[in-house]
Amino acid sequence: MTFTSLLASRHQPSGLNSTFHGDGLAFADYAAQSRQMIATARKKLHSNDAAYELDKIANGNAPFELKPITPVAKGQNVTGQNVTGQTKSYKRGVLLTHGLSDSPYFMRYLGKFFQQQGFYVLAILLPGHGTQPGDLLDVTWREWTHAINYGTEQLAAEVDEIYLAGFSAGGTLSLYQSLIDERIRGLFLFSPALQISSRAAYANLHQLFSWMVPSQKWIYISPDVNIYKYESLPKNAAAQMYTLIQEVQRRVQDRAPTLPIFTVASIQDSTVLTSATLTFMACLQNSSNKLVLYATGTKNPAPGFPADQLEWLQSALPEQKIISSAHTALTLPAEDPYFGTHGSYANCLHYFPHNMEKYEACRNNRDACWLGETTKENMQVDLLGRLMYNPHFEALKVSMKKFIDQLPD
Image 1 (cartoon, rainbow, N blue to C red):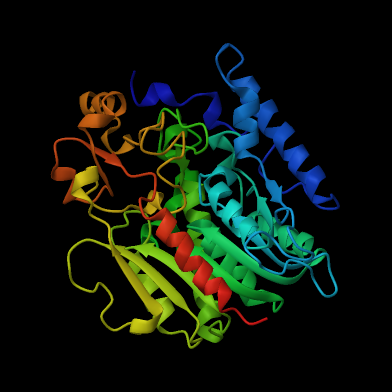
Image 2: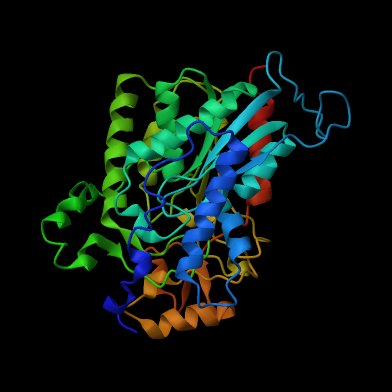
């Protein structure tokens, strides 16, 4: 199997998913329509694979809705939080937005957490995602903001207070929405993409010649064995992210947000620049802000940050063969059946295609792998799998609950 042979039908647009199609639909209908779109695209790609679990995969990649858990007392959920709104059905709601090349699957555990805290929860699917990687070839960042705005409006019809939570690109989009929509009451950002390589600005220069060499449209062309996340990534996706980030940075410089923000990041992050996240959080004035930071070593990784707003945790856990956290490792717990400790998926793409021996060893011998971010230092170990789950997920939920408990009524 060669690099060029992997340019296949999944690397072409499906024709179903480059724009947002939810306008005018109730959220349940939007979710059902998205699920059908995913199933249609995936069935076409895997029509000869009898073992392909189409329903499971379509459901995992689709938008979802969670209502506050069944009250045990009038107006309260099981944790004692008031869930009834004064003017709407619910007091608080949160919109969850996944990252670039990801799907709502990555937000499911966070969704359950917010549900238990009395939030009405909606999770959207960003256009271009969930179907096939080729659907990111033509998508624009404006279509992503279109989806965010739709989700916000759906929340606004049901809740008194709107919160946004996003992972990576979803964090960037959540921040963008908060800068243009004064109804947003707070943010939860997980490894937000606030700065990426400036080379992304030139990613779409391939259009001058890629009509002759289609593979030049792609940053990565990978096997795409992950059922909830694309492994192949087109240059257009990076270019759209760069433009979005530039727009967010411009707006933040004009008017820094004053609403309460809870942010989680890892010092060891090979996808986004965590230094930009630290700079962003340090410039904010809300005393309720909270930064949870994963780092190796024994020294405070953000010494100038207000001590009462910073919580940093040791991300190297040698007894678990974890040498650091990773960009991909914040929103899922160790018990996740697909990405967790005993999950069926191993992220070994850092070996593909230049070292196929290690790629196959990493995928097939999980016990031999150390886990962490794909930094130059970490790559020195014999065999590295990129960490896909958060061993501190339970502690993260405690930190988020403390933040929620001190939000203004």
